[in-house]
Image 1 (spheres, rainbow, N blue to C red):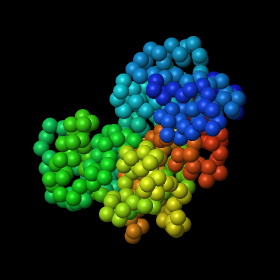
Image 2: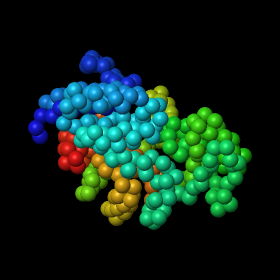
Image 3: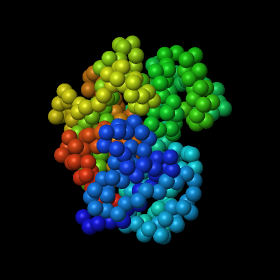
Length: 336
């Protein structure tokens, strides 16, 4: 690959320091992904800079005009303090136009709205849990066909925001209380879906027309009490002490037969295409004891920090972190 001018686009709070001492741990720093990507791009010989933005499109335009990047490495997760507005920034990049990495705006719109995702996947007969939507300002009334236990979460928020052990409810009173809590605290509509008891699996997918499925990954709960649902709560994902206490880790999924693996890969590729995703994504699944597979969420532009699930799965597949970053760049350039 020729040497490129790469503009890394992120939120202003995630701009990494210029240098991190070798003995300093930063795995739980909010800017770790940006630091890993930026330092890897420089190590590969590219001229790379990072731009932190909050709500100013003109800043992006000005930087593009002045820096003249060959490609933008998109690490933006929100814009104007709204988690779904980053898709509009990607639309802006297409209008400038400038090549960029990751998912296109249409795929982001379809997959970021959990209810819309469910409806599209259901139309394509891709298995997922039964669900209903509770709009803000309306009475909480559960459809008779929707059985407990239910998993309650925001329709649009990401990174397990608002998800805790209390998100799994067993009766109508707890359901109403949790829905009201989510409405009041996060100001979004709420989705309540059938809670699927089983293994939590993650499947990374890479590509546009031709797709590469990375090894299946599993979230493990070694010390979680038996009466607690094994779900990816906010604390499970981001609280180091909680992770250590409950033996939470992730690793290649074991005991998956070749036939089941092929079925999981097929389901994930069908979902990826049905939602119009491009670039790369992570599919979140639940696997029941009888090997029934359910798509829970589709995550375009997932976390790609070194040591996180997507990068670890790519390494298991045979791609070093440097190779992963090179492939993400090449894909963005080829698509443009």
